[in-house]
Length: 293
Image (cartoon, rainbow, N blue to C red; front, side, top):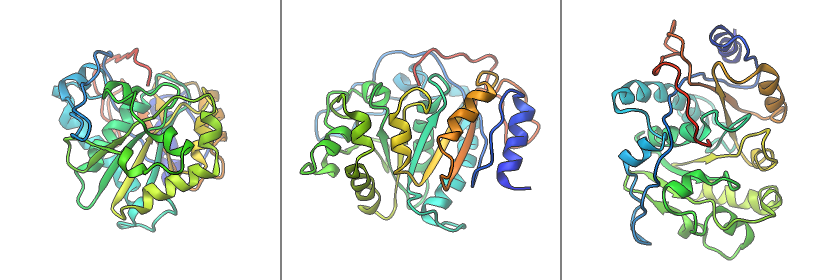
């Protein structure tokens, strides 16, 4: 039985309404969220951005303190096959595998929570440098929370080839973690993300540092056209599925947009059922976040 078949079996056991067709790779995990709150204040330009744990936790992008250890263990399981695909550690390297897009079928399934916690988990790995890109350009949640929504970023790099993209990347006070803001809003965001320039930008991001892994927080697959355009430039795609919420036809429709992609993974989020295997852990009961992520 393949990894995908085992993952699908576990998804069906935990949430009968969720079923997905086979892809090339899959890993299933769960996470927890909390209600949104105030943004994190950025440092002065040129200074590392402060990843204020208290504010991020209040905003629902980090787990409650009592559940940090369990969540860390789960994200270790999520990141291992992704890092292996990205840098060839213990597995064949996937072409473009350093570029990882995190998305969902619809808003509210936990993709931004997953993007941030995956990036944080990867940043503590040996020999890995992580850039978290706010590619949800219509609703740049990460940029807003970190106070860089007015800063130049991804869209500006796509619009102006003369910009030094590396100067747009903001280091944080978390070692080995940097942020690329969404950038200046544009009515041509889909066209920019689908342009030849996007391929140049993603290639430059990956090639600048052979130890770099780039995690893109993407718009939902069925909510905007930007995510489908973005997926064309990614080496790996992680689809977040909200347990007991996302209907089977919705998941199927989302994954049809990724047909033919070389590496698609699944993350089961907000499960409220007890774990029967190491793939699952229950984080609280009936967690129901209202934040747009």
